[in-house]
Structure formats: structure tokens, C-alpha cells
Image (cartoon, rainbow, N blue to C red; front, side, top):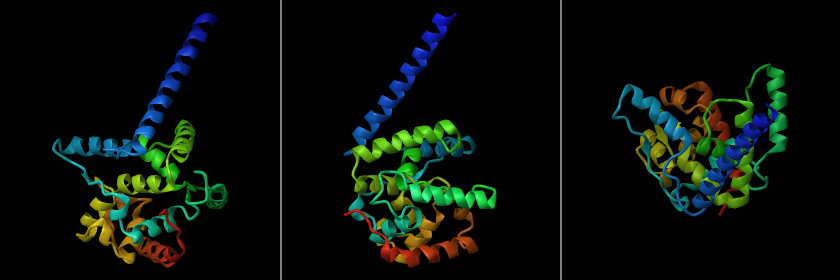
Length: 229
């Protein structure tokens, strides 16, 4: 019995190692090749096609230089003010989020960095489990070690969800403003950044008081946001 248990554990360890190598290979490829999709995109498409087999995602990749500096500043101001200085984890932000959650008695703040959010979007599901958080941390370390901050932000802006089936800055700009990602104004960018925590809700509640309030705060902070060059 003990021998079979050891074999089973070794098999699980081998599978886990193969999975990490699979992730590593994808990140290595994406250093200079663009991802065609993400785990979140695949998950959302499956859900949409359950009701409509012909459903498609709104998504179009655009390079970093063709995304408005307003959106870059807005996302960093909203999601990760220390993006350029941290190693993938904002420990101060995590501590502040934990204190806020403890005070409220529920989860009201996450403390995740842009790198952590990208790790989750590219490879993981939306389910919150201890295993997912551990895997998210491992992937975050890989991203930070293998990619420059500019590349991390570029991929992030092209794969995050901005509405029901809307992914990436170009699709979001066209969907909400009939514009391009390059032409987003500071007010438009701030509102898009404010939508990130709950994009499908704000897709149908575009003038929600909380959304407009958060967008105003983000726009006021954009001037001090440092972005990768």
C-alpha cells in the first residue's frame, strides 16, 4: 500500500511539474508573440455560446504604442499605483486590503497587482480557491522574471474583460465610445479603468453613481501615475 501511495504522489508531482513547464513555455513565447486568447476569454465564450452557438467575443489586439497614454495612466492609478516599482506583489497594498476587509467583515478590497491580475486572466478561472491563489503567485513570479513591465501592461490591456464578451482596450473603446484605443480621452479612460473590477455589471449600469464617483477619483490621480516607456 505504501508503495502505491508513493507512486501516486510522484505521479501527481510529475503532473504538477509538467503543468508549470507548460505555463513557462507559454510565457516564454508571449515575451515577443501576442496571445490569441486567455483562460477568461475561453470561459466567457463558452458561457455565451450556451445561449447562442454563434456568439463571438469582441476583441482586437493593438500594440502598446497604439493605446492612449490616458488609459495606461488610468489603469495604473486605479489598479496598481506601484506597478513600476514592485516585483509583482504590492505587500503594502495587500496589508491595507486585508485591514479594510477585516474592518468591513467581508471582502471589499483585493490588493492584487496588474501582474497578478494578468496571471489570473491568462491561465486561471474566476473561482477563488487557495490553490488558485498559490498558482497565481507562481505565474506572477514567472511573468515578472521573464517580461518587462511594458510588455506585462501591453498584454494586460489587450486581454482584460470590459463588458459581456468585450475584451481588450480596442474593443472596449469601440464598444463604449465608437472610438479607438489610441484616441481615448482622460475622462473616457478613467471610466473604463473604473469598470475593471466589475465589467459585466457596469456594461448594463454605465451611469451607476459608484462608477462615476470612482472614475472621477481615478481621473484626479492620473497625473501622478508613472507608466512604462
